[in-house]
Length: 569
Image (cartoon, rainbow, N blue to C red; front, side, top):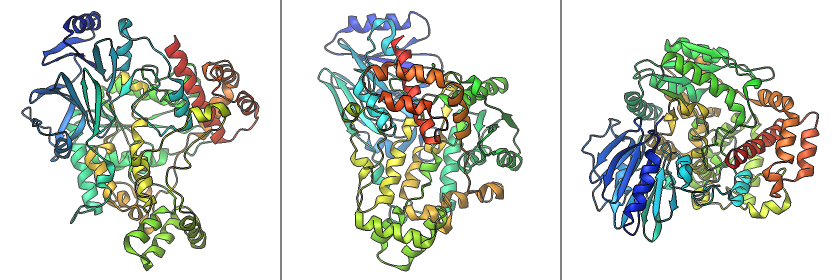
């Protein structure tokens, strides 16, 4: 995998920039790609770099027709970035000179990482945060407030990371870097797309066409993707769309272990329908090392240890077949509005008034959530009376010390809450806004890019425009996506209502490592900083039959502790 680093001197300190460039290129992993116009770009051979007017673009850029943008693509000087993200999409960071510095534009999908920090008079911007600490440029220092916040809400993600001084350019944001520091502005807002445009076609056919266009664009970049399917709808949609355009796609699935529902029948049906080979693998708890974090090079404790076993199997098979990318259906649940909340009925009431259609939506929600219509009506009335706002009940303070809960207060952005009278759409916007938390921390990314093509900007914008109640029409979750691909996927997958789970795998992983979990948590940095409630953690570890939720919470804390140890070392 490639990496890049931009160096921007402030105050005309070219000597410092040159010294940093020499240090970072000494190993040979990075080369000088460009020097001039106030910046120096260092990049490895695998990085895609192209001119963009008087600036440069790092990553992949497509036009709205889904074809790769021409090498003559430009961004006019008077464009603050808003017009650019409306005309283009992809996974990119666009850079151009600005007064006494540079201007960075990160695309709204979040699929192209972008972090930055300051070393003296030099700003360093990179997709590989570990480079910020190479050759003593910066010294790692933990921001315990951010660590605690990440444990309270895995969804929340602000500019400041858990490493002091390291900031992230958030998706859909422009950052100007200069002698006076940083100036940020949003150029893409999910709420701008949360209502259909006049005359916008939101049919199942239009959704399928949008997904097909995006997959065709990605297939032009990655011709031999290894598509990871679970047997569920989201990964099946990715496979069905990519198979039409990719040169040599192949499938891999991960068999469930004892205690988890098997999905092999669904995965095999998908492979047979699409005419693709399927590699069936068997993840083992013995292949997970809880002392190791796949987020060890990232500035946040943002990985899940239990995925290590599947990660290794996927990487091994990709190497055997010469795959150039891993394609995942990740994000599909949130994108396609999969939830069992009563909120879509409230949205419909406020949008269309007290009509019979609201009762029909309540019945749909009851069927999706395996409840009775009377139960759905009761929940609806209670929610209307309570007028509870979205975003007030997502914090998780289990196993945390009381002193840490105030330290970890998580702010809720306007993006999360939005219009309080449309709670279903607000929940949809919030879910999509949090997806960038799941794009990193994958070990197989050291071999080839991990692609989440459903998060392509045109697909996201289309799904945002769909009224929340349409995702549960007919009593089906992700209803519009099911109809869009009904003619391309096996009936058993289109009609499937169950979902796979990792509860059994995680329970065995925890049980096998109880002693290690106790050592890591009770003697580690989180406990030492007073973030953990030691007595509660100890009781949870001793619990002979902990719930699946408690096991996942303990493993999440262990993930954070492993990340801390990696940076300390």
